[in-house]
Image 1: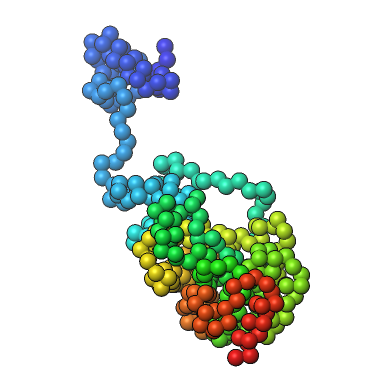
Image 2: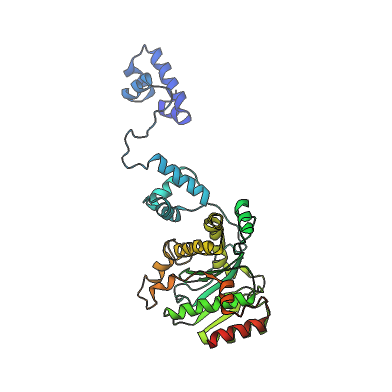
Length: 365
């Protein structure tokens, strides 16, 4: 006959049933039953007085256990965002003000079987775009535009509101690869005049705040920059020489080279454009909301990009001593149409000759 422990390996319920059967045959004699099944008397009494199922081993008092509502909140955010324990720990502090250690978040995700969202990529081995350790702040930047009216990204009500009140349709972004700091502008038109003006305004701001390294801006082949034209790119670089800066277009079909600025557009849709434009009825109100979003990005929002480790752009820039002026992160969000109209030389065309003449006039002033 199998002993109690051998039967229990197969099924705890069957082991208890066998114990009760042997106990009944022996007239309830606990000691004799224990000898037959080769277990202690305490186990026999526990099987006699208890249920067939095992009693839960969860302690009655757990002073260090995470509260149920907090664990539920972590599970909910984990499923919604797809973040893992490190980013999720930072999110709990930034969004709700709860300090939850990374190890605790990791255990909660494992216990509730919250899986990481997998993103398929063409190249399985991730290779960084830059040598982030050796990279100087603002030495490498990416510029791109975003069409605000994206029905696939915005709620229908927000989309209709932007159309109704004629709010800006294009967002312009320049993002620093090292610190992930960003500079933003908006416009109603998409042209090289606007693109060149935006780059010059950002470069002027950086030089005014004691950025002394050579500045390289990388963009795509859109008509708002150089349209894949070598002649236009040479003309732009001639213009940027005065700022000790240069512009380079990425090769056609290599959109991943713009990964830093492209990734920021998703955050714009989710955390700004899907929420705040519906509260605005004028361009001025919209620019004010955009200013708050940019300030939040640069000074309060954590980044988990290469080399950031959950720091904000401001923390990343000043983690070591720097001579760069601390006000550099308070770049005013620009309304490019308003700037061009104020100068009295607004050119509603993408022809490069007109744009070059306009910017040469700006430099002479």
